[in-house]
Length: 173
Image 1 (spheres, rainbow, N blue to C red):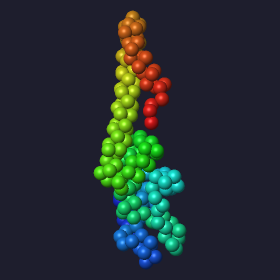
Image 2 (cartoon, rainbow, N blue to C red):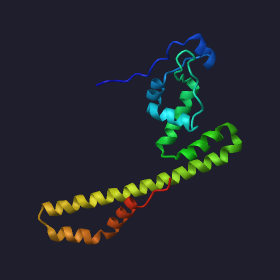
Image 3 (cartoon, rainbow, N blue to C red):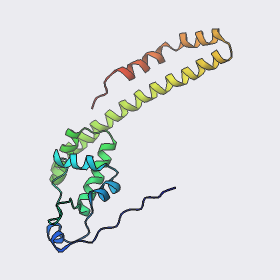
Image 4 (cartoon, helix red, strand yellow):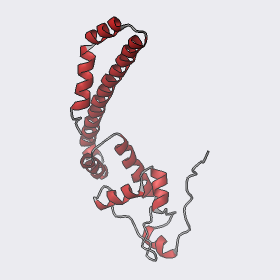
């Protein structure tokens, strides 16, 4: 079993320390490992403005992530894991600096995301009920109980319809 250790900060050059301020800096690979997001995603988020431009090492031109950058990436990773849209993520991140003035909107954004997650959970539960129904159905078939299988399907029309709707309706983003 391979264990991935948290990368240690690389040695900084004087030029990078000036560009970044004091403290350790991390490569994009390290930032990717620490945040759990692929390097391509980190570059994309920078390109579209989800994260601000990352400082560059003047000698190599490579991105240099600070601890502050990594803290931001942790927040973004958590928001992304909830399925929050890029548009809402951008707004949420932009509101952080406003503090108490933006707290109401932050709560609204998170409440909206909570409702979307509730809907997704309900849809997944409908799909799971369908799977359980089919397990019972195939148990009847295995046991050569066609009457039991037919009765189960006839009694379970509501579960079947809910599963179809959950799979065919577009979930709100």
